[in-house]
Each structure stands twice: as structure tokens, then as C-alpha cells.
Image (tube, rainbow, N blue to C red):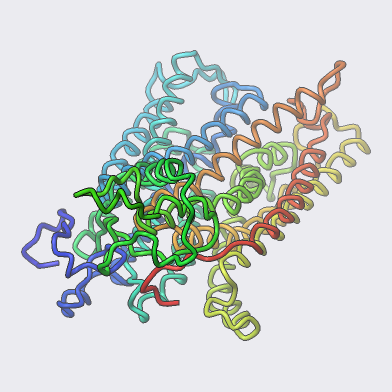
Length: 580
């Protein structure tokens, strides 16, 4: 980028000669300029933005369950479902943001515009906890009532935040990976490492949120507890704009949904056509570039052959001056659709993992409320235990990146030690033990309740720190599964649909939250029949929370089995001109 350009104006790509094959800015003809942009030079701004944004998000959300129960006076089951539904929405909205990024705005402007909505939501949430008339009325600490209006304002703010996250979550990791040129061997080898350090930066922000901000919310007040995350979000936006001159930009490729529909319609219209054995006879542009803006050509694959009918050239196509895109599509367009369909079984196996992961901000907190939270004279906030998940991630990321990869590489011969799918599978296996650990702890806690007749005692004499193993195990599983998914969905997505596929991977978290909410509803309905207290009553000492954790452990085992089956059948994308 030339020094005369505004530092706040992203570069518009007008000269295709200065673009890489994946659509990002290429300075091959201007070596001095290429060295000034992209690669690790641009990453500190992106990583700093993500660190502060995650500090804001987790600082606001880590303790929401207790805010719902103590400040808004909601029952445990109601609070759990509301939290799951809101959290799920935070991971559904990225589909909207990703569509706008890939089709029209590009990742830069999508992140910038949705950040404003995010800040508005954070500001309104802070006001709902501080302004008289908007904040709940409390007779004493944690004994509060909230009117319908006060609750509505709180949830309006939360869902504005959910909308704001929709433009940030699917774009930031992809935008960071865009800074590395796939056709440059020296840059490509750093991309996998970028995803590790991207997730590392997320957890640095989460570490501060789970320790300092949770303590502030409990001991100083919710106004400060929500206000500081709002300031952190403003800092995140400043970080992002500061790197404008360093970034490489990618052209939006038009509506990906329209392109996918064209392939489906063309294939259906040609359903009687026989696909030729010689796949070179299928329609594709003759020049080196794809007809899809910002995308490389894709090699033909033999799977899902029905859709190849969309690329069969008919005699009537030769007689027309122009090609009807709803009747004839290129091989690359067909392979885009195939790539998305191939991703879906892998995507589906991430839902149960997200259900397990979501318990840290949900039922783990409920379990912690009925344990001894004292450390000497210091009272440990229940949500602060999440710090051990982030510590686990911060510990395992450099261990994986610097130690495990070189060791695994010696055995597998793979440049990254493990393939992306192998890495995801290891994480799914590890996550099973988090639920086993949580279930065993609850069994032990209930035995103490029974032995000492403590059914009406809020804090049972068993230390809250016995929850550390289940948090630490989930953190380890994250390093394998979540980072593996980030890289997998970026690499296997069509170039012009990377934001959308990142959003697709995030919807597993949404569905995981919804599955958790559905399971709680079903379990509560079944277990409370005939006047029984149920698995998750308001007084957990009379419940059976461990049954729920055992249920999730069994579902995780079944999910791992399904993942192994689909992973063995998966074939990685082959992009023309990509370094393997």
C-alpha cells in the first residue's frame, strides 16, 4: 500500500495482476511493497483486536448465569435456558455477517461496521446495570427483583451484542489467515501456527475476564463489571483500525448462496444428461483464473457425481451467444458445492463437543454454587474457575506448537504433525473425560451431603477447586478440536466462501447451546414426573446433576465414533496452484 493512502481506507483491488490466486493483494511485481503488508507484520493488530474483543465478550458473559439468577431473580432452569439461547444466537448470527463479508462488504468492512453495533450493545448493557430505573432493585446483596421492562432492556442489549459478534467471529480468524499467501511457500508454512496463536490470544483475553472482571462483578458491582468490557471492546476496535495500512484485502465474490443454487438448478435441469467419462470435457474457463472473484480454480473430484451434470456442455450451449449460468456452471462452481456438502458431516460432529464445552458457563457454575468457595478468608467467585480452562489453553498451545508437532511429525511424516481431522478427533476423545470428571465430582459431593444431612446447606464442605480437573481437561480438548476446526474450515472452504464456512463451524457452538437447553428441558420434564425433584432442581443437593454429566459423556463417546467414520471417508480439497 502506498504511503499516500489514508490509513483508514482499505485498498480496493482493481488490477488483477497484483492479486494472488486466492484473491488477496499480491505485491509480487512490487517486492518492496509486499514486504510491508501481510504475513506476521499484520498479525499483531489482528491478534490484539481478538484479545481485547474476547476480553470484552467473556468479561461480560462469564458470569451471566449468576446475573440472571441473582439480579434478574430467574429460576435456575429458566436462567440456564436463557443463557443457552443467547449464547446459541451469538453463534448463529455469524452466518449473516459471513454472508455479507463474502458477498458484498469484504471482511475488513464487515468487522468494522459490526463492531459499532457491538459497542452499542455493551454500552446499553452497562446502562441497564447502573442507571436507576433500568437496573434491578435489590433489598440486599444478590437479593433483587427486576421488572419486565428492566429485564427487556437487559436482553435487548445482550442481543445487540449477539448481532455485533455476528460480523466479527466469522471474519477475524479468516482475515488473519488471509495475510499469508497460499502460493508462497515461506508464508504458507506459518498459517497453521497463526491459528494456534490466534486461539492463544483469545484465551489471554478470557484469562483476564475470568479472573479480574468476574471478581469485580461480584465484589464491586455489575456496573463496573459490564463497563470495563465495554471499554475493552472500544480498545479492540482501535487495535483493528491501527493495522489498516498493514493488511492485505480480498475482493468479495458475490452471493455464494446464489452460486450454489445455480449449480443445484443446473444439475436438476440436466438430470437426464449422461456425464462423460472424460472429465476434461466438463465446462471450465480456459484461462488461469476462475470466473468467481477471489477464488482459485478447483480440481474435479469423483464424489457427488450428480452435480457434475451442471457442468456438462450441451449442443444448445454452443448455439447461444452467452451461457445461461442457471443451466451451465464451471467445474469450480460445482466443486464449491461439493466442498460444502463434504464439510457437513464433520461439522455435525462438532455439536456435541460444543454442548460439553458450554457447560463451563452453565451447569459447572451451578455445581460450584453448592461447593465451598473459600480460600482462607477470600471468597472465590464461581465463574472465576473458568480461569483454569484458559490457563490450560495457554499452557497447551505453545506445548502443541513447539513440542508435540515436531514429535508427531517424526511418526506421521506430516508437516503439521497431525492432519486437521486427526487433531479434531484427539480433542473429541479428551473431552469425554471432562464429563466423567464432572460426574464423579458430583457423586462425591452428594455423598457428603447425604452423610452429614446437608440438604439445606448452600455450601457443602468440599472445595470448589476440585472442579479444576474438568476445566483443565476441556482446555486441553479445545487446543486440539477448536483450533483444528478453525484451520480445517478455513483450508477446506472454497476461497470465496471462507467467512461463510467459518460461520458454519461456529454454528456448532450455537447448536451445542440449543442441544444443552433442549436436554435440560427434556430431562427436567421426564425427571420431575410424579412429584419428583428431578435431576436439576433449584436445590441441587436434592438433585442428580451427575446423571446429566453421565448422559453427556455417553453422547460424547457416540459422537466420537461417528466422527471416526466420517473422517475416514473425507477427501481433502484440491485447489489448482496450491502448495501441498
